[in-house]
Image (cartoon, rainbow, N blue to C red):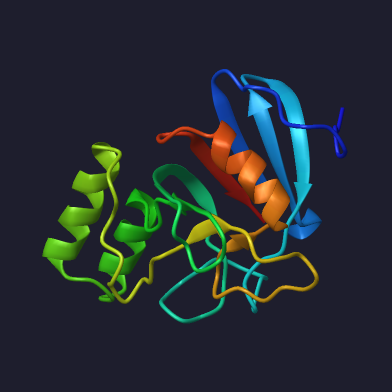
Length: 164
């Protein structure tokens, strides 16, 4: 069930699922779908994010590591990109150093902010700013009023699954 035009209730045990091909963000409480939002993505939305400035929205399992009330795109929730899988790929492809690899793994294991300035990229957020067309640098964007609703309902550590 999709509650497109209702206010988001308090969500217990929330998790977010982003389906890039559908341009939708789903909020679940456990296994129960609570709400669906229309989203837009990076300027090059197809495929997996491989490196900084490729315009792609990453895919995989992440978590919310920060809530930013002073985002230049209204409000924002920080997505823990790069994750452990990204670190492994980046290390194998010589995009990141052993120290960067280890730092990504350590911060992911501790549910902290991963390094944001490696060749893999970073600063991937769910934020406001509108949903007319894919326009972000790899982030997930919602309408401002929907971002406010999501921001208020989602705690740090919330799981985020981004799918093709």
